[in-house]
Length: 262
Image: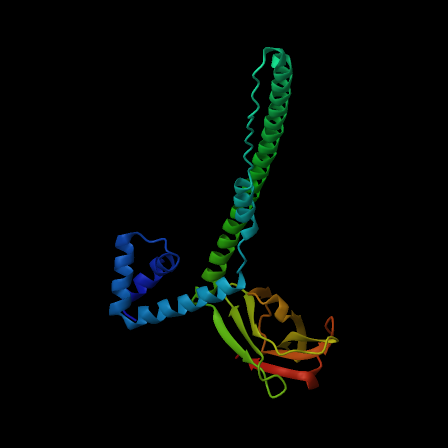
């Protein structure tokens, strides 16, 4: 790889371009490099795949009920219209008409008062919904920061990727391990796990100096990129079927997947 390509890859422009943070000039430069150099195109495709992995791991459904509640509250405001068509022709009925008018005025005033009270309550609901929305936005910003940190880990040249596939006992099993020996970090992405009886679970192990070290339980209901303990000098990773809740000792005879790390 020539110095020009290496300098470009180390500049961080590809990461910024992938996250939509480049200027128009920077974007034009990145697209030019991708078109001209196959090495950069391959790096871009790899980073794009890693971003999809991280996005899948941190996907969270948007809170639609907040917008719907606000729109419903604004649309449900009633309009009160009062009409009086009573006409009086004789002078001696004036006092009765005045009384009725007073009652109508009082009733209208009460309706306007209750209407204003309701509007005040509805405004309070809107304020609370907007406050919740702001909290959700802050939470999403924190999630974005987490996504960017995970993406940087996956795109680190020192991070090694291991695809772990199941054997005949679990053909549909597939997980991906990301191990960085320099930073001493390990992450795993559960892609698919075959169904097990309720009393059983999948457990991942590291083979270390002739021993099987427990790295945790795998649960497809919790499909996301997550950290697992880093085991220096581990020779292999294995997945076994264990009793629900996990086991302290690996059931080697129930092994469903294994991959060498060296």
